[in-house]
Image (cartoon, rainbow, N blue to C red; front, top):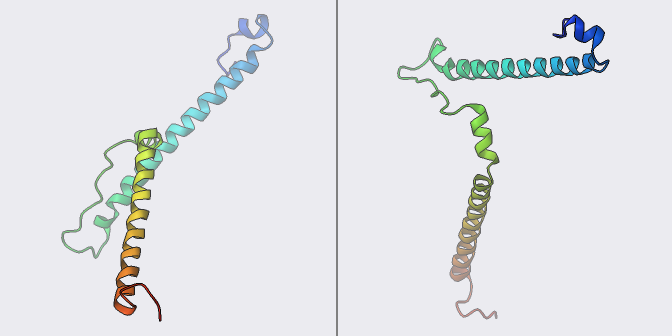
Length: 122
């Protein structure tokens, strides 16, 4: 009866009902746990962001980390979006290419300074 079943459902209903009520109760508890955990994460983050202000010898002008602009779930959804993932991959490849170009230019500059300009050896 603690699962929310009535006496009539328990005694006169389908014998599978208690199993389903139990599963529903477990899902409800899991949801409550997740909500409480998320709330604790927000509180923890807020305290950590404000910690620089609470230090006894903090320098004048010390500021707290700004409060997050979006909830956790929205940020996770944005990271999972295909266009955002593709944009992140493009930015990674662009950074790799820029490093490669810089290294190649540096190699050719050092080769021009130290070696033959016509490309032949000897």
